[in-house]
Image (cartoon, rainbow, N blue to C red; front, side, top):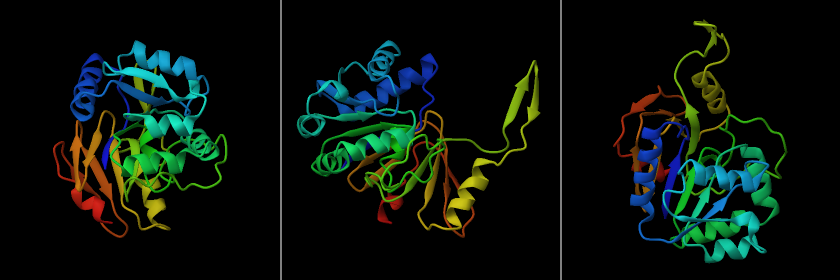
Length: 238
């Protein structure tokens, strides 16, 4: 199994360049990426945005929404790239089109999977640690289950502050840590809080953290922080 799961936040030239380098190293000499834009409403605009910002990493992009048979497109794809947006909308579409089973089977057979944000959420057992609003309701929260642990993309530590003019004011809302603690009041699955621009690369039984730090949450245990380059292979043994 070959996976590259990113948090998102590729909004600076430095982060985009780093993203391209990591993706090129991961995907190698393939020619075309099958792009899954279902997390956003305007699929053509999404593909155009990926190309404009250089997040194609130099590969040809084929939008799955433009193919007459999405399942067949997955079955013949060299690699799949599932983009970010609303995770509920993405999972709902994958379920309705029969793509959960198709993607899972191809990844199990060795096809590389690149996910960002919502695309990372759906690679987990469920989407129960997403930050998104349920603008649609999938049949089930169960997702691709390509890894046996959850990821919380866009993770950050501490309180949110709102900028008003030139001054920052504390928001006083729930922290991300508090929300993930609530998840573990009912669930045992570990959750990796992935900072912006962070990625987890999985190759068979190996998993490694790239780009930025991450924080691991486990039920009944203190949170544990990991630096870029850390070996996270133990998370595959759940």
